[in-house]
Image 1 (cartoon, rainbow, N blue to C red):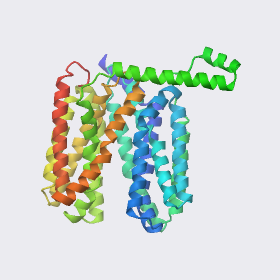
Image 2 (cartoon, helix red, strand yellow):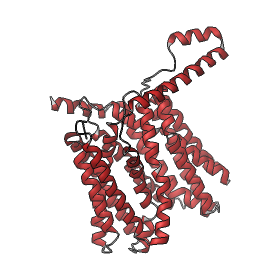
Image 3 (cartoon, rainbow, N blue to C red):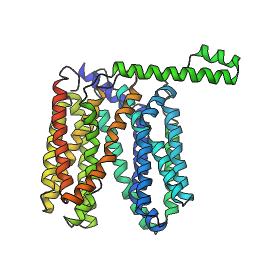
Image 4 (cartoon, one colour):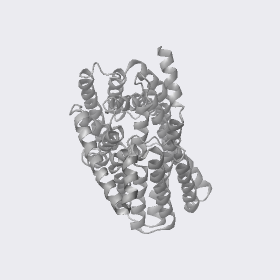
Length: 429
């Protein structure tokens, strides 16, 4: 029987919806990695002559657009279906890159970054909702979560590498880069149009729609708005009554991305100023850490499905805390590579484990909305993390952000340990 269940789970991971979401995840992260890491900073600073402050505002708007609309798009996705929601949103990414390609003013670029974030905001709520829905009879979605994370990381890593090579081979021809990214956006829309519709909660019944056609356009629109407002109220009521989680879940969601925000703005500075690694050696370091994370995601996801999330999250948080703490103290190149690989392994345990753990907290009735809310709260840590990290770097020294991130990982271990003890009967806990 367990073998039959596992075979059914593997079959669902090959479903058109899941394969389509993997392709979309990879291409979206490829596009964002290319734009935000390689193209836009240099293009806006050196080519257009914009200030670093303006660039920072544009990038912040991209993040706000991505994070702020996750929950609304999760709600919309459950009602309009995956195909319409994702195709319409991803069309915005094509518009955003087109604005960047053909307009040069600071206002237009900031607007394009916001639209880009808006266009990618339903991605993770849709992916998480779908992964939760296709989990097998034993509710085992660790493998699904690991596969999603692998596609995301592969896109994030390959985007800057491919775009760097392209920019060098074309003599930094931004026009060519933008045209290629517009093409990627068009492919995204086409893939989204092949997703299953799967409307879970319709706006109105057929009887209401038929009656509306007799009453005329304005009466129909008024009736739709009334039913839409009623649907929103019912959604909020259902979330309040079905979402019964410990208060500790909310700071844990915030801290999960806060620790990444602490490290993201200073890791390059630390490697260059403290470790004095060459750009090629730094690229090798990123490949080593990211590669081992990607390779370990699938086996970790399978083991999580078999043994539950508790041992992997406890081990992952502790391992990350210790390795980040020691990483800030070593300068030997060999030890630096060793601890980067250990951090990569710990994240391979944490990423699918944490998403699976959270998936068991999501009520069945409003999965898209609750996933959007959870992901918005989790993503808010990325807003605060870089600000705190910069202050720590300037005031307390270059090692301070790493100490702080180690403390946050230890705190996450404590929170998860307490939460998992209170969920002994929950599957996957």
